[in-house]
Amino acid sequence: MVATSVLDPDAECSMDVILVGSSELSCPPSPGLRRDLIAYEVKVNQRDIEDLCICCGSFQVHTQHPLFEGGMCAPCKDKFLDCFFLYDDDGYQSYCSICCAGETLLICENPDCTRCYCFDCVDALAGPGTAGTVQAMSHWVCFLCLPFSCCGLLRQRPKWRGRLKALYDQESESPLEMYKIVPVWKREPVRVLSLFGDIRKELTSLGFLEDGSGTGRLKHLDDVTNIVRRDVEHWGPFDLVYGCTLPPGQACDRPPGWHLLQFHRILQYARPRQGRPQPFFWMFVDNLLLSKDDRSVATRFLETDPVTIQDAVLVWSNIPAVRSSRHSALVPQEELSLLAWDRQRAKSPTPGPAKLVKNCFLPLREYFKYFSELTSPL
Ligand SMILES: [Zn+2]
Ligand SMILES: [Zn+2]
Ligand SMILES: [Zn+2]
Image (cartoon, rainbow, N blue to C red):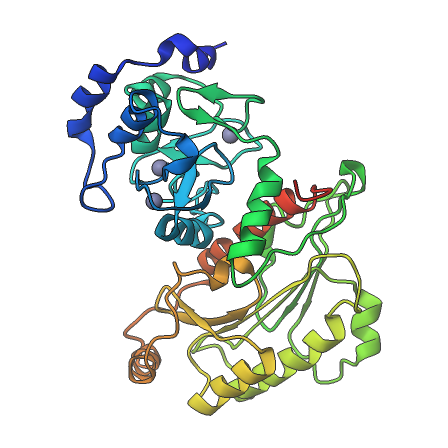
């Protein structure tokens, strides 16, 4: 087994080696803090690792790291909450599972895992040189995928999924909801209702529509004028409702505001009845066509602020990662108007929905995976 060499307690290196390796550390997060001092503090100064931020080395511990033994300072905790559920196009997490930063990332090769780890964290916590060893391996399974894994200072917390949820519940503005277990054999593909913009291709490429029989669970509608509540309830229930204004250039005799109001109307029909213990997500994308007034109507009706994504679209959504800080908050009014104006003069290309849908929906896949399986927190 290749992974054993990492788990071998003998792989822990002594202090002098740690200090030699320190020149490779790229700029530490805060002046005066050194990741390599974590090992020194714990091993030589006998400091409890729970009294250190394992993400940056700070002594100002605010909470416990949910996945691994050790503390977390307030700024690192904020970064963690913002970034943990962000994914790249390749389907892997965008940032290190320990510090939620990192440039070069080691990727877990367990097919069920999407976690990454930065060189700095692995070297500082698992032992200097470990990142290089891992990188040289042909097949590496990460610190969370191996049960009871312990490597240097890096010790997986028992019931870390529950702790992850608890951290979000306590610290985040948007606590994660928890859902009942669905046994594997009973799991179904996500049921999607899409309005105006067809996203079948994107959903299929993400594996959202797969089930045994190969038939998708997507209902797509271009015109909803005559759709009533009964229709939507008959087609549903849905897990996800998507709608958008049409990209400029696409012929349409309706004003953009019409798409918004119709989306809102249909969304009310599709919302699960109170108490249905099931996740329900929605997303409305404006290709920068809504007027200022339309946008404030959208914010009022949809009861959430929009975010701009890729400087190209405005998105209102209740999907956790969409609301996180990687997507910039609403850009100033003037900039938005300029952007829309540019767009209409075809200076900025309109991005296809593919990347957008992927970026926004990928976290959902993980979200369902993490939190549909939880029985109880901790
Ligand atoms: Zn920190
Ligand atoms: Zn890291
Ligand atoms: Zn893994």
